Image 1 (cartoon, each protein chain N blue to C red):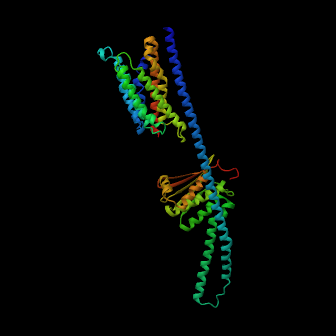
Image 2: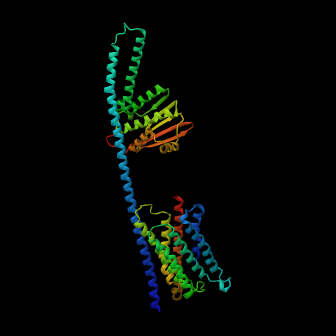
Image 3: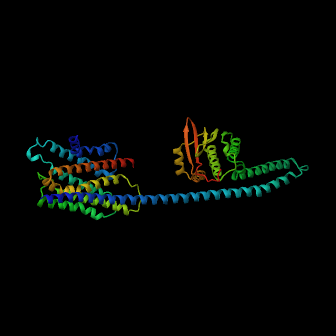
Length: 221
Length: 272
């Protein structure tokens, strides 16, 4: 029973995405959510590749049976799409900072992967990349709430963007320290690190449920 | 080594809990502030609606008072003068007059009588004594008799006896709406058969007007509300707002129906 549960959790990065995709099939989304829609499809392709590489690692050539670079790729795609999504929300709050953040992230990527880490590292994903990505996305989420708190227009609290932002907020808040310390933990307590990845998987299911709710809400508007 | 590992685990747990707490706190503040803003907006909206309703009620009241004043002036002043003229007219001796003069006298007498009758009609239209003294049922019935007779329309009534009492301010508004609707049916729909009925549920009084003319549906009514700025429609709308009532137009098997739903629970305690 526990094995089945673990198997379900291991594949959650793929099947969880089918919840928002099902809503996308039924309801047309507004232009402001196009980037989130793009993320869902991109995430499906990357996560499917991650899980297939992991599942068939014995059958693949030794040089190609690591999926760690795909986690780096997923993190990069997620950051750029969500930062563009927040910038396109047209909230007149910290506008310059929001535009500078992706530039800083790009600089960080160039410097980090030129001098310090290898993007295609066989043995580990870049915990520095994933944790910085989580911190920056958390910044975007918090500035969204702060803008809404200061905004004088009282609108419906739980609109489509709210659900998407809240789902992302829960995901990055839970995962920031997991990403930051995961590689360290895999060296010291491998079993604990593996079980901790289940927390990441659960938070990813939550993110997808919130994305689905957001897509569903925009169908109502 | 072990101590350092425990330290990492503790840091991880504390970090995760801290981040989650920070996120949840900001989320709760956000929800609290948004709810407060929404509440404020709703209160403001309610206040604006109440003010708007008060203005409409005041406008309708002053309109009724003005109608009453004009009706009284017409009846007491112009009606009295015409009545006295008529008396004097009847006293004229026509024995020594020629045929032309007699004809002119007869024509003038008929015009004077018609004038008196018209003045009385306008006065009663402006302020229905029947409505004030005998209530909504009698007033509507009397008004229908007048229309039915004058333009060959068959109007049947099935009104409840509960309207058979003295009129309240709401009844005056209901009467005016029914009056306006019947005018419109007569003028625009060209109906030959009209049926008016009333029913009441626990918290609603429902008037239904059915006719066989060229009526309108709800969508057409909504369009007219925005495209036409006729006084009749405006009057109906204002009185509907004042009564907090609903008006529904529909069509079924070639017959048009207008349903007027007035909430009775909302009415003031001294109203009938």
